[in-house]
Amino acid sequence: QLQLVESGGGLVQPGGSLRLSCVVSERGFTVDLDYYRIGWFRLVPGKEREGVSCISADGRSTNYADSVKGRFAISRDKDKNTVWLQMDNLKPEDTAVYSCATDWRPYSNICEMTKATYNLFGQGTQVTVSS
Image 1 (cartoon, helix red, strand yellow):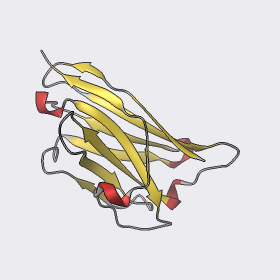
Image 2: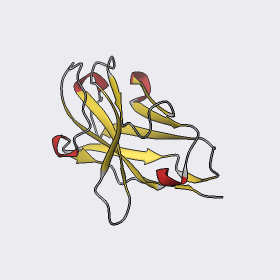
Image 3: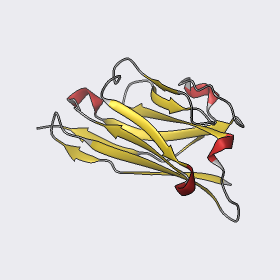
Image 4: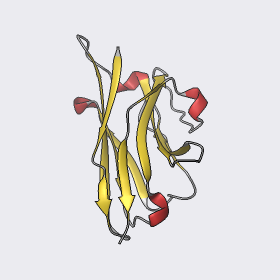
């Protein structure tokens, strides 16, 4: 079964940076990220899960929520089966549990951040932006 494991969260002051990682694995199998699009979502208690960013299965397309454009950057390393979310100039309103998600889209060059279209989410990592 495919598994997503996030890490890299923590407490940071406003204006600071964090880099989240999402490792994609499946016991007994070699994962090829070219078959999976990856999205990053965040959840604040009492609010709907929000799409933050995504990268297409072929790695050529990315997308960002308006609230993070120019501050966040998504990237991936196929050899490490890892997708990163670099978060710069963090703001208190970025505080949330961040989760990566995936679904099967072999070689697709399209990504979107509609949570209902992703069928597997990781457990998440807490990001807190506070002085």
